[in-house]
Amino acid sequence: MKSLELYLVASKEDKSKESFLNILELSIKAGVSMIQLREKKLSSKEFYELGLSVKALCDSFKIPLIINDRLDIALALDASGVHLGQDDLPLKEARRLLGEQKIIGLSVQNLAQLKYIKGANYLGCGAVFKTNTKEDAKLIGLENLALLCEKSSLPVFAIGGINEGNIKELRGIKLAGIAVVSAIMKAESPFEASLRLKKEVQSL
Image 1 (tube, rainbow, N blue to C red):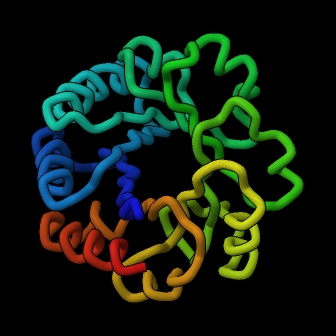
Image 2: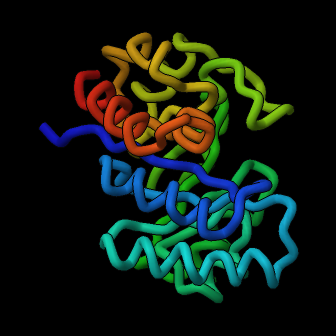
């Protein structure tokens, strides 16, 4: 049985570029197998320039770099793929522009949205728990998450407020992996936090 993946959704925020890249490198060394770069506040130029450094890092460890929302940045960087929300570019158009070889992730919150996942490679489902990272995130809860995983024809990653304290609550749910933000990005030791999270993910 394939082990579950630990997926890091990362934003630079007020960190220096060096500090940010160091956190990402430590997390990869400790078991993160996929990185999504989510930058809502940077200009396109800043996002692209940061993305170049993150892509070089991901390439050196041979792991995928996914760009949040911004198809133009994903294309410019030749990133591994893009992650889209329900209000972003339609999947059909994203797939046409990206081509068949790239990864497309889609955020899904309810069963009705499973009718419109053709063209995606995986789903991100949440928020599972209360999160400060995304103020407007609606909670879907564990029951709905389990149901989405059962009904989905695509691999599902749980996201939203997941940390070392509550990750065990996901045990028994048919997941492909766990996506975290603050649990690594705001940890005192990103390396140790990633190690512990990876261990927990593999025991789900």
